[in-house]
Image (cartoon, rainbow, N blue to C red; front, side, top):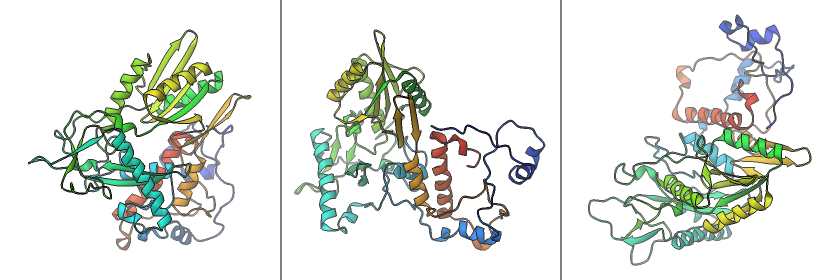
Length: 418
């Protein structure tokens, strides 16, 4: 994480332009953001600048991102479950983990070329095999008076270009008190992650990463839940039957909680202790060595001063949970990790995500402008002919949310501009 080493002291003109009148009378020690010396728009009229900045907004769809939602949602009431608080937060996550034109529904697969169809079919068959191996459900007749939870396929392309298909439940079709009760599941805090990364750089700790495969499928359900059969894989002769869930499945409101319960139990068996201030962090002291485990849902980081101990506990963890060994940590939660062992420096950046944000909003060839608005730009309320609508509000939230995601993680220096 890089921070500016100098402070820019704004001129009186800059202060009067970019600060409210009430704040101009107050003295503040908070540094202003760096202001570009030249007007990037030249002498163009402000009305032309505004036209360029708001172009194509009327034609934006409600969900402009081309990636696929990884969490089902109730589009009517906006209930997005515990991991995402709004629609645009899911879109930000999608932009962080993958991009490109992806099928949104199972029927979209049938419109692709034969080669693409085969690749996606292989991905779906792998998912069905995982569900079968984990004994997730059994086919039964739907009891009278009960309704089955709807399901859907979601598709994504990993950072290593691996196609991934997941059959998930539509959580908004669950009924509170019948299909679920508690839903909250703790995850590691970002502040803890930054602190541990700083300690790892200072003490030259080893950092190993892994990803738990089909983590939610290991959660044991306490409720009686029925799920419709996945499209494309309905068992012949049993089309009217439904899946009686024995274990949690992705998309269920309580899936993350049930997985966390099983994970916590296994870590206690490994003699790890949970951090009281951050329930997503575990540690173990062996003599003079400290082993730390940072877990965010199914993404885990093992770190410590003793490489042999780190590798041993990582192997023990992978024997308990089927995981993908990612080796030396180079990425975590969409952040790239760059390390210089000689200088004992670790740098975090979201360059890849920032590039996706720029591409998402068609700003690849944009010019830098002064912050917050360019010189001469006057904000005006919407006229009757240009009233705000749902699509415009969604687009605005996505723009601001994209910048907030970057600001809160690796770029606090853009906080004033955002």
